[in-house]
Image 1 (cartoon, helix red, strand yellow):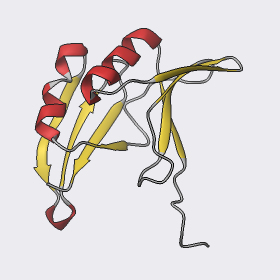
Image 2 (cartoon, rainbow, N blue to C red):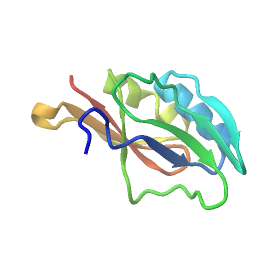
Image 3 (spheres, rainbow, N blue to C red):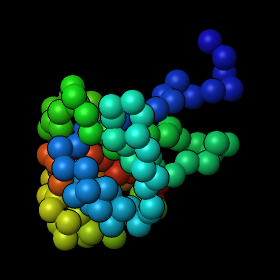
Image 4 (cartoon, rainbow, N blue to C red):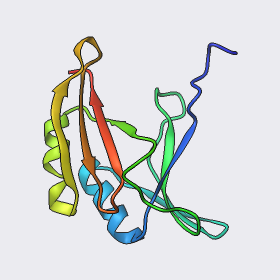
Length: 125
């Protein structure tokens, strides 16, 4: 296995209400998502820098994509976890785990998004 690549390359977060979910994520992370139609799937891509650390991903609405509060838990980088979590409830989400230490690995928080998915945030500080 090559040592110059990260094994996670892409993620997709299922949504029921595309506009509500897009507005939620843009508000919570203070970013702009880029809308694309890929075949039958409506997608909103998260911004990415090709040479930066981390995986790229998208919100996706389409057949077979069902929001869930079980299964895989994706963690977004959040330079200020408290500020990020403070924006969650204003757009229909619920904070499940307030900022907490994970020792030498930094801090995490977890919330339920506007669609019912559980999403984590991580910071080194």
